[in-house]
Image (cartoon, rainbow, N blue to C red; front, top):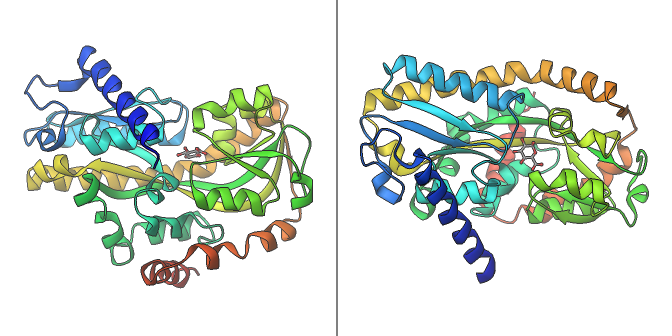
Length: 348
Ligand code: GCU
C-alpha cells in the first residue's frame, strides 16, 4: 500500500476516534475502557460500537440490531451493541482499521476488504465458488474449513472473524441499457469493490474497472464517472442506485460475502460465560439474516421496479465463460487451493 494512502487512512481513523470520544462513544460505560489496542478489553461489559455501511432498512442492520437486544437481555444489560449504519464510522476500509486499532469494536466488511490483509480470503470472493446462499452459509460457518482463516489476522491486525452474512447473488446494473455479453461493456466503467480479484472480474466482464467505496457509487453513477455497478437487489434498492442506473441484467456472477469482524483483544477480555452468550446470540443473528434475505430481495425488486427499474433475465453464458479463468489465475497457493476444494466439496 502506498505511504500516502496509509497516512490518509491513519488521519481518518484518528479523526473518527476524536469524533467518537467527543460524542461520548469512546467510553460508553465511563469505565476507562476507551479506544486503543489491548485497552479495549472490557471484561465487565460495555456498549459495543458496530460499523455498518448499509441503511436501517437493510436486513444486515435489522439482524444486527436484534442481536444487540438479545445480547443485552441475555447478559442482564452488561453487554449491548450500538449499530452505526450508513458509513457513519467510515467506509469499510476505514472501519477495518478502526476495529483493528480498537477504536471501534465490531464491523461488517465485505470479503474483498479482508483479501487485502490476507490473500487466502480471496478464495471466497471468486465468482462461482458458491452455488447459492445455503451452500455459502454452510461453508463459511464450518469451523473445520474456516477455523485457521478466521484467526489468521489476530496477531497481525488484532482482528477475529466470526462468520458472516450473505450478500446474495450479485448482478450488474447500468446507465446505458441492458447488457447481454462482455462486448456490451466495451469502453464502459464498471464500479467494483477495492480488490485486485474484482478488478480482474470487471475486466473479464468486458468493462473498464473502477474500484470505489460503496457510499460514493450513487453520485458517481449520477455524474457519469461510472456507467455501471454490480451488487445484489437489496443494496440496489436501499442505496437507490436504480434511480441513476435503471437497467439490471441478471449476470449472477458471484454470491458475495460479508464478514463480521471483532477486535481480538475485546473478545479475549470477555469472561467465558459472556463470550459464549456473545457467540450464541451472533449465531442466531446470522441465521435470522439468512431468513430475512429472500423476502428482502423480493421486496427490493418490487420497490425498485415501482421506482422505474427494469430487471432483465439474460442468457449469462458469455459472461460465465469470460469469468471461468479467474479461479486458476487467483488461486496461487496450497492453502487457497485447499479452501477452494473444501468449499466446492461442500456443494450439493
Ligand atoms: C454489498 C455488501 C457490502 C459491500 C457492498 C459493495 O452491499 O453487503 O458489504 O460494501 O456490497 O459493493 O461495496
